[in-house]
Image 1 (cartoon, helix red, strand yellow):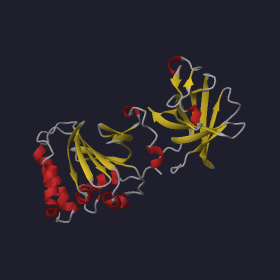
Image 2: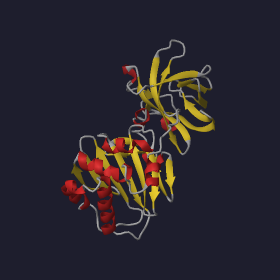
Image 3: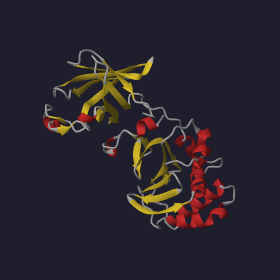
Image 4: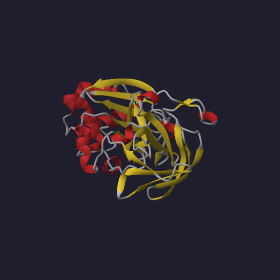
Length: 311
């Protein structure tokens, strides 16, 4: 189900999305790793050494899914944020070796070549607040980044499985951290892609993606469904939106959470007239795949339907 929410955010700066705080550092709830947008499943801290976040594009039920995640050949990533200034590169390498020995039940020697290749990528100088990202791409490619710099890669699914088992396996280096990163995720049902309809004819018009910035809901036009309108320009819009392409235009802005699945006091731009009006949106519990959208001049509440994962 997470896939429904992961493909929505390509045109938006990821630094603006909501974040999860772990100790003194933050993890983006959605982040991009080598072109793949992944959702933060969970994050935790280990012994005041580092904080770790696990990013996936599929759901897990909880800590019992650790081995399934580690063994799965699918895009995923681990983000490690150093929170101490007292650890050296040699110590990190030793901890990594120990973790791999635990993860393989004492059989890490079978992966010695891959382990050496990976360890040789690690720098000798480790600084507080360094961010190391381990990005796995389906097919066996495991890459290591330090901050924004790619240090190299190891091409081995077997090594990937062992590496992720350091934290997710049956004998992890930290049980509490394993529980934290494998916490089951419950997405906000408001977020996602929604198909809008002409209220009179029932004909589908466009797909709008809803996302969150600083706890407020925004919505942009992802696609106009009529091919002749794909290159349409909003000549009637005002301000910065005037003469902008309709696809990509942010037409819902700054809706604030009211209660349950309702957000209100936002602004809605009607691309037909350019008029900007107050807007409320909500989902009724008995119809979780229907988004009610009400704005001044809209002729009552409109009902948008959730775009399913396979559409």
